[in-house]
Amino acid sequence: MPIDGTEFGSITINGKTYEHDVIIRLSGTVEKRKKKLSKKQYGTSHIISKAEAKSVFENGCDLLIIGAGQDGNVHLSPEASAYFAKNGCEVIVQPTPEAIRSFNRTHEKKIGLMHVTC
Image (cartoon, rainbow, N blue to C red):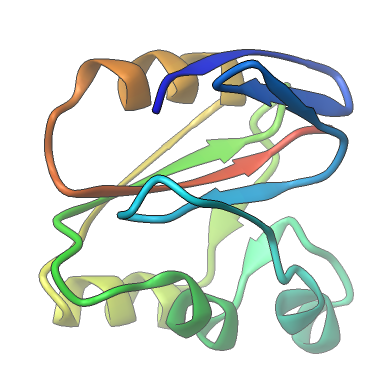
């Protein structure tokens, strides 16, 4: 499932454009990101909470690639980082355009979380 590209406020995956943050599952299905889980705890969706981390992770995932927004503003909370480490899931956080390149290049069992604005 290739990610075709991104512009501020949207991402195009396999020819379909989404105008919201997305999660790309191990199966390749695309879901809307549940950023309310982080916003509830931190007042912003730019810090990924442990609750959101739990909703993103799937057994068998070796790699989570986070598209941190066009300017790279999203990051993991310490609790979320520890959760992924405990589950043996490597995390790469990059500005979304770079994260797309990483996602498309790797053949690992991966999940993508892509933030499409700042």
